Length: 315
Image (cartoon, rainbow, N blue to C red):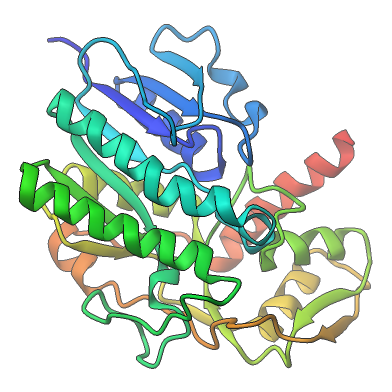
């Protein structure tokens, strides 16, 4: 039987590179497309030389050419951390709009199943808690975070339009905070920031008073959820995340404890439109995909801290 072939945009990024590994382990041919704006070639360097892996350096806001058959397309190209999309606002909007359009065009041409990486940020600073897929969100379209939130909301609308109008077989995953090996230390998100500060015995900086909540999902759980969604026939958005909620202050204390650090917590002003709560309602994923996270936060944090310790030693 001929191998299935999958295109992953943003495949050199944190999640994208883990997806490359996953689909190669499932016996598929993987075409990874990335312009390396925020992706890292080191994330996929172990796959070079694998006959089932191909890397194309390309900006997906331009026409995407992939010869031969394609069975699946996963659109993961996008800056995904606040430090990136605040620094690259126009590129973020372009990859969410033009990039999604080009990737959907490829799916339509190839008759491929298309999966969009959306985000819990489509819910904005939510007035409903926990967040379920039928909540339409509370987003400031002209705030600094709007470049990411609205790019993803537009991408969802475009994906559903291609499904309804062109009959493209589509999926939409709404990804909640995910962590694990291959995150960048300078990524600007809470986890890598806290871990790198704690490992260096520096002050751990918490935004606001630390009462805002987040729900952290370990990367292997996230990848398994995405895989199950791709292999399903669900066209509506599905939340994939870990509902175990924690305040940012408690999370900082947990990181300090697990790293045996002497760091102290210091508080800095809350960024504009920073969500006060974030917790996925995953009842849809449980019911329709038979998926729920398996890795506890402590277990996942220990594996991630080990990865960051090794990264710091290499520098």
